[in-house]
Length: 322
Image (tube, rainbow, N blue to C red; front, top):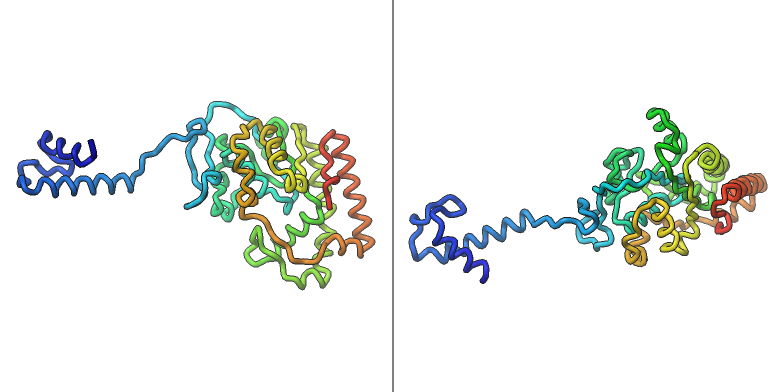
């Protein structure tokens, strides 16, 4: 029986119509037109208020990252009674943290959050940016510095390792990471994918920036290695580019979150997201080789990080540096 037949029967069995008009006020000849009108009203209500189906992922609230996207970019807020360790997702700026979070979103179907809000990322579908850092509806918390975790822990009168039991430490070749951060800071609008003006690479400004940032890159890793008392897993950016599924699977399992959507990682266009910068500038490696002072500094910093990773029995990401 179709919708028109059902409404026709209801029309004759009820005393008052849906819109409040008494049945006897309508002439018999207008019944068919009335039924068609009711059908149109019913269909309009369905369009304006679609039926809300429960999520297939543990009855989570569905949050779409944008219109006309595939299912792989639909991301959820957790709403589960199962407790998972609060995991930090950290890296030196420019190391691909946003891309890694994007991969976690696709692999798990859940949002990550951060200690401070980035409205530009909210516009890209990172809805976890709008929640507090300790909101259990997210599966990870982005922060760049160990000092942020330490301050929050002090405020709650615990150690950082208690407040954040686990940390994913994303490590990228510092030459590339510092170049990426320089591009972000020196493009109009500070876009995550923008580029600095070409002339900044030829008048000494970039090399001066690099000389200041390289030791900071090493110290940022040392902080997590030496002062953080929680469990750390090193994530090598260069390896993640080549073996994306394997690296992401290992990362989300470390977070104790199900690797629910491997098919989404296999979709290469989606896995790159909108956060990859294509640099047209000269090879930074060649620039450093031509500067003995910076080259010596780079060798010392890289060796220090290599030693720390081996001492902690973590994957040596320096092996993947180009």
